[in-house]
Every structure is written in structure tokens, then in C-alpha cells.
Image (cartoon, rainbow over all chains, first blue to last red; front, side):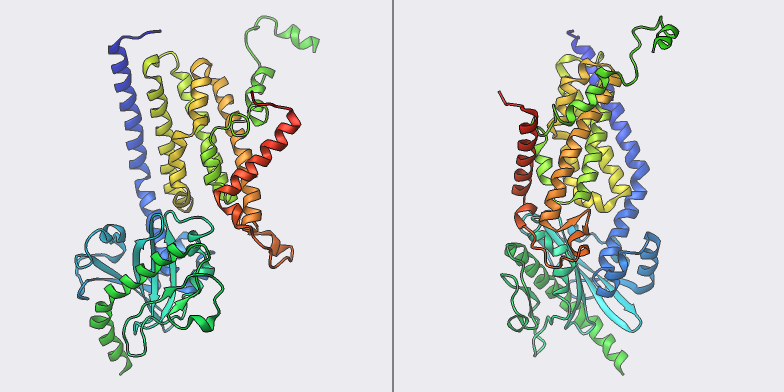
Length: 248
Length: 221
């Protein structure tokens, strides 16, 4: 059956309008639910940076996660110099979009965790893994010296190799590591090459590596080093003073 | 038997809802005409998503849904589709359905969406879908096409679930994320890293094809 050109054009137009209308309709209807899902996921990742919270997360319902988040997290946004930025909601800052700007132009959200006297600052980080983006939330102690916990995520690392950064086993290796040296200089925490290194060999600034995923580990290392550097000013300007006043 | 034929003598061209011919649409792709092991279509997703059973199950359901509905829609429109632009029309319908699946997952199963999103998008180019539209739905009635889509979907599903089962249990020592070996008291089960990489899927699919063909006697010409 050979149809005329007019028929083909009309058919294509009608089909496009129907399918396009259907898709935009669905997008409108599902939009709010999707936004909630993304929101919940971000909050889970932020809470997941605290080891004790992460353990509880798995059994929480959606509402419990949101309630817990509201209970223990307060947030603020700082700029590169460490000055607080007013009028921005930390949860709404898109870290990936920010990452595309130069370091000086970005804004840096900070999530303060406080529960039963336990305090930590959760810092969002973003960087490049071996194949695609990696990101994470690092919880550091208020004096900016110790890693309290970390949650890492990735978009396209190799399953079984680099993708292991999302596993609890790998993330637990970061807990308690020190990110400054004796004189207070920032040295960051790095993952070494090779796996099953004895703890004595690693010391307080290094964590055991992932066999076969050194390039992903390198990505995590530079991501952490970069972002600890970016947040240093914030801690010097805001947290140091606050911690001092609290101690007095 | 005889009483039944007496009662319905006139309606002869009305075929039973699941006649022998129609049953074949569903059962053929399960083994004799399996999309993966015989037609060797849709291999890329079979390799990519099958490291764990849970995402594999979601993928299997998604592909089956897309197959059934695209077959139905194309079959309903088969007399109106201009022959010269039929591939584009098929692609538009498939892409719309896949986007719908993706959006629904994003709204209601965000964790799965994060894990599968890339592969769900790739259902559009899954050769099984286009293959069934071109080979079946364009020339058959809607109900038959739905059965055909269902058959191919199930044929695809059971293969990738089998592959995922072996890859997950050897590669990670788990089934649906449940650590079976630890539950059985075997503490240090040595997992095989090869199974987690796509190579593992090739090996498992190879074995399935081998077993199947040695049983059915099928020979590639």
C-alpha cells in the first residue's frame, strides 16, 4: 500500500502530538512524586554519612527518614571564602551543577548533625571517577580533624570493582581517619593502591585500597582532597569560633 | 465433547481465547524460538544488568511490559501506518513507552531508577522489541500480538533471570541480595570476580545455549 505524501505527513504530525501530549501529561502528573523521591534520596545519603544513622536507615520508612532528618540536621550555605550565604537552602543546592563552575564561584552547603551530644559536619563532595561522576557526603568532626563517616555514590563505575565504593565495607574504612597532620596542616585522607594492607602500614591518613579499582580510588582521593580544601575556610571562619565559645 | 459441539455450531471462525495456535505464540519463545539463545537478540542488556537478581527482575518486567504494549499499539495501528515511515513510527511508540516506564520508576522506585536508568533507556534499542514489531505486530491482530509480545518477554525474562542467578550466587554469594552461603554456615565463600564482570554473563549464556541445543538438537545454518 503506497500512501500519499500528505497522508504520511499528517499521520506523523498526529502521532507526534498524541505521544508528546501523553509524555508531557505523565511528566506533569508524576513530577511532584519524583521530586519527593529525589529529595528523600538526598536526605538518606546525607544521614548515611553518620555510621550510626546509616545502620538505622535500612529499616526506616519514608516518613521516619524525613522526621529523623528534620530532627538531627540543620543546614547552611557558605561561599568559597567561608562566609555564610543568605537566602539559599542547602538541600536545594545542586552539587553537580555547582561543580561545573570554578571553585571560587561555587556555593558550599553544610549539614550540621547533632544528636545526643554527638556532633558532626556533613560536607557534600563531587568529582570524577574512572568512567563517570562520583559523589559523596563526608561527616567530619567539628574541629575539622577526623572523618566520622562517609557515604559514597557513583554513576558508572565498574560493578564489582570501582562500584564497591558504595558498599559499607569500603566506607567503614574511612571512619576515624585523620585529615590534618600534627601541626594542623590539611593532608586529606587517601585510599592506597592494593587491598589487604595491614593497618600498621596505613596509619591515620590512609585507608586500605580496592583491588582492581585504583583509578576509582584516585578519583575519590582527589575529590576528598579538593573538597576538604574548599571547606577549610568555612571551618576556620565559622566553626572554630563556635566550638571555642561552646567550650568556655 | 459431543454436546459442546452441538451447542455452538454456528460461530466457526471464533477462535478459542487460548487455542493451540495462540498458545504457541507464548510457548515458542520460551525455548524453541528464544529471543536470546536462539535468535541471539537483546544480548547487550543481558550482559549489562545481570550482576544481581533484583535489578534483573525489574528489567525483565520492564522489557515484557514494553514488548506487550508496543506490540498491541502497533498492531492496532497496523493498517494506518504508512509503510515508508513504519520504522520511525515503531521507534516513536517504543521510545514513548520506555520513557513512561522510566518516569514511573523514578517516581515510585527511585533506588531501582538510579541503578537501572541507563539500561531502561536502552530498551528502546533492544532488538527484541523492534524485531517483534517488524516481524509480527505489523501483520497480525492485536490479541495475537499481545500474546506474542508476552511470549518473547517471558522468554527474555527467564534467560536473564537464570544468568543473574548464577552470576549473583558465584560473584557475590547472594540470591536477591540475601547472603545464602552465610545463612548455610559457610562463612568465607570465595566469590568469583569474573562473574561480576560482563565476561561472566557470556560464559553463563554460553552454557545455557549449549545445554539447550544439546537437548533440542537445534543446529545453526
